[in-house]
Image 1 (cartoon, rainbow, N blue to C red):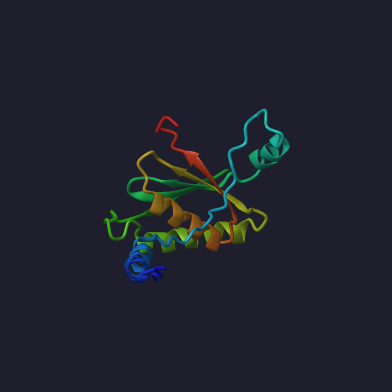
Image 2 (image 1 turned 30 degrees about the horizontal axis):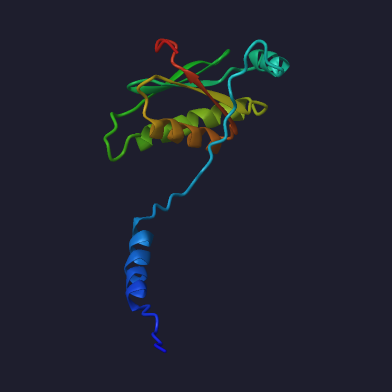
Length: 154
């Protein structure tokens, strides 16, 4: 009768190499959610809400190539010039601060206003849209919606 032992050392060596390799190659991503309202169509069940919003201020922030433009019914236009962004810093912090101040003034003047629409062109950087959303929420406008550019064909 022959007895032999199972040699587990080669299998353990493989696991010792594979486990750190798999842990180093794993991608750890923080998932965050940006809450925003979808556009409301004329046949939608929430058409009554759209009618109420149409009678409101219709506050909008247009992200142009060289400025942020704050518009609304009865507000006129406030233009906040911004410097051209770089790859490392796509948004101009001074312009974002000016945008926050302008939106804060609108919220102080119209405290019942809680929504803002961000109008972005087809070539607007995603980081810049998120920065404008953050500024709008920080100014007291929690309901942020997105719209396509009027001249962008969207």
